[in-house]
Length: 272
Length: 222
Image 1 (cartoon, rainbow over the protein chains, first blue to last red):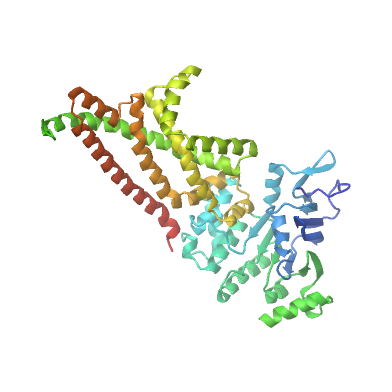
Image 2: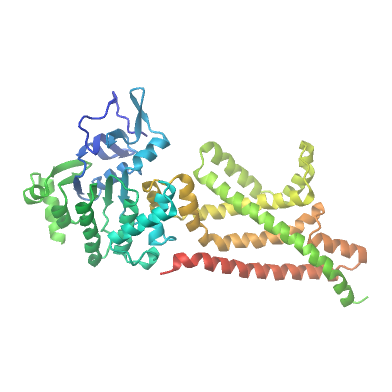
């Protein structure tokens, strides 16, 4: 399975290209279509919140972007280059391992269940990839890991193992670990969903800080409507594998146009 | 004739002690092969391309389903027909290692299969190569839980070393047989060999528990 578009392949990057572009991207599991001809542009530095009911394909958007899921049609462009295919003699062919690794280097991802390496300390978790992938020396990657852990407020937990940390602390380590690779695009996949309510705030504060201090493009799947409203530049409401409605948070939360969006927001509001 | 002859016992003890070193050598070398090859088998079978994983699965089943003694004989007596003559000890260690590698590979398989999908995904997201994913993330987590199972095979391999007496490796059993036939007394040598195996097995079991505790400590720490 590739992301080569059916029909004539676009031979050149889209002009004035955004940081991330989904160009008619389709994803299906057998007969079940998860995402149907998705079109989505995200500008550099833009913060996009993705909301929607479960099964609407929102997590799949991030997973495809991180190359964790192959796509069945269309092209994903990142930083002006196709993600899982590459140009050869003017046509798009499936990407080789080298291209994939180069493209993945532009993207970082934070997962719902943290996925920290349990046998490594917080600091080692942040050093592993800079050491082995970027080829940084042990001292350099340690300095980088230390700096990032301090930034997420865990300067006193460097030598702690994940099992010794609370969920909120683990998720902050995971954010530091992803940032250590200096990605251009950060993906947050329901990063507060597995946390106890009193720990959500500390993780969201870290994300706010990243938004304020770093020039990152962010895509986040979230159920924290309040956070999406305050933090995102744009909110996309997914329904049935399509973007049902999108716009600035004030517009989407304040006066949604689509009946499905209204229904969803009403249901979420009732639950909180 | 006495049932148990103490002077004779002390006379043969040094020979048996010496032979026990050969047994230990065969055990350690054999298990080193089994541990490394078993991991390679497991990875090849689980993650290799079809042209590798399918024949490998067949090969593993074949080795597991045929007696170790036949494999020892095959390496020692049949390989020379193909121009590969191996010293008895080498052939024996290779057969032990190969045989137990197939068992160990099943254990590794269980260990590898138990790694949560999220760990693999984190490795992809961090752009780790396959080599670093396995070496730094997957294998260090897959091994501690399976140390007891691997340890069982270590002891089992140790207890199978007397089979090497069939190709005249001078390990414990072969030495005891020689002592017995030279002196027409089997009670002492065979009993002592049994006791040596018992002591070593118990010691090995204790050692495995220690390793297990050490390896698991880091992850259990909470």
